[in-house]
Image 1 (tube, protein in one colour):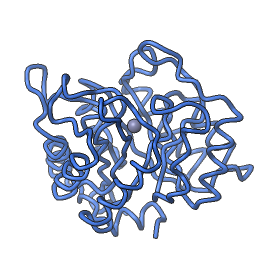
Image 2: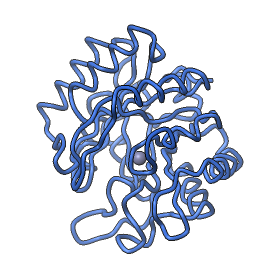
Image 3: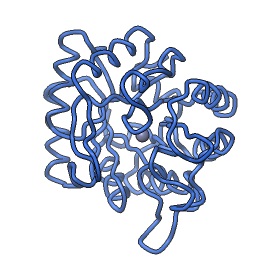
Image 4: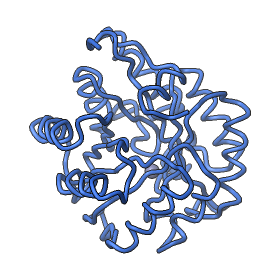
Length: 277
Ligand SMILES: [Zn+2]
C-alpha cells in the first residue's frame, strides 16, 4: 500500500486524568459530556476513542460502572468507533487499573515499563504488567502499548514472542511528557525503525504531549503512521488560544492528512488495519 493509499487512523484522547475545566472548560469530565465530545470528534474523523473516567469532583476514577456507561453511550452514538480504555496508573492503583477489562472494550492501553512523570514515578511493575496483559488476552481486548521509552518497544516484542501479548498489538510512541522522552525527531525515526524490525506486522501511532502535539501529528501523517490527538494530551490550539473542543483538535489532523494526501481512516478501514472485528 503506498503512503497516499494508506488510511490514517485518528485517535481522540478525550479526557485523560490530568486536565480539568480550570485548564480548559472544554475538557469533558462527566459521562454525558464525554459522550457528546466523542461524538463530535467522531463526526470530525476520529475512529478510536481513548478514555479515562472521572469522579464528580473531576478527580480520576477507575469505577467500572462509569466505563460501562461511557461504552454504552459511544456504541450508541458513534457506530463502529473503536473504544479504548486506559489502564494507566493515574486512574487507580494495582489491579484496580484493569477492573474495567471484563467490559471487553475493543482495546486498552498498556504500559509495559516504568519511567518518570512530571511529579512522580510512573510505576509499572513486571507482575502487574503481566496481570493486565493476561486480563487483556482473557477478555479479547487488543492492547495498545504505550511506549514512553525505547525499552518499552523491546519489552512489548518479548511479550508477543512468549505469548503474554497477542502477536499484533498496536504500538504508540508517547513523546513530550516532562521528565520522560521529549518530542525528538531522531528518536521518533528510530522508534519506527525499531518497531518495524522487532514487530514487522504491527501498526504504530504516536502522541505528542503539550505544545508538541501538532508536530508529532504531522510527523506521523507524513511517515505513514497513525496518530493521536485530544484534550488529554494538549488543551491549546497555540500558545495563546485554548482548543475549543476535541473535535477542533481532530480537525487539525484531518487538515494534515489533506496536506500529505492521506485518506482519513473510516471505522471499517481502521478495524481492518488493526485486525479488529
Ligand atoms: Zn490516557
